[in-house]
Length: 309
Image (cartoon, rainbow, N blue to C red; front, side, top):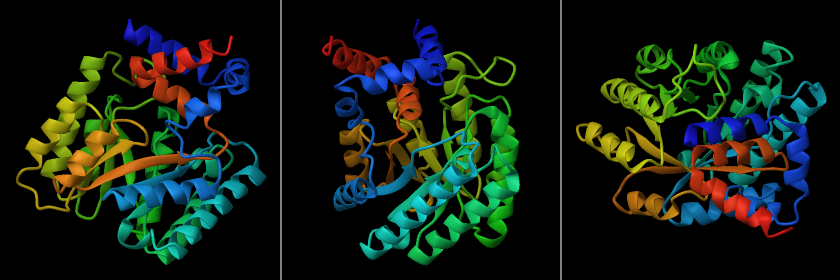
């Protein structure tokens, strides 16, 4: 049942008619605040300050994806440059306290791969100047090869650039082996896009088993694993696999607004915990993928929408 609901929501995430209904509902934006810091750079800086004060680290995502407009891609790059400048001025970026996550389709990947690479270079340079790093988000499977190639290119000049792998893809265990080398920061997540059976596992159980296999590869390697999961079982398994690793050679990552008490608990226990903080006006696609991940999220949102009728 959960799988069917998930597929319906993921299909709706790319449906413009549904987007107009959701975005127009009076309480939508108040509900979105649970998962999105806000629409402005001031909101991003505020959320970062609050989280770092509580001993957490942050990865900021300026929301947007799938642009086919060069002007919009450039505007997204400029938004990241402004964000990084603001973080640097506020003393929040140094030592990787706050980094940024970038979706390459938001900076021109679907227009021209070289445009996306040049855009990402501009952001990486600004991050270096602010004393922090960039992680390239992973999107649907049609972009995987391009994203990993751009990651390889960026690492020639910015070796601390992070990458993301998704355990629901059949290829990911092999990708983990290739990327588990010294200096390689890799975020492992389950994956949140609608993918065909030919390229991705479909059941929750298969995805979870694949996650553990991939995590074993990363934890046994010489890189820096970033464990992106809210699942208590997977968090516990990660802790067991990391028991022989030195402190500061891996981290946990969780989404803004999801399991905040667990985020604080892990941080209080001495673990590095990074909170993925999205902000910006283009929140619809991000929100729908969060709803697809957990039925409790969907119930929370539908109750709010129902109260408007």
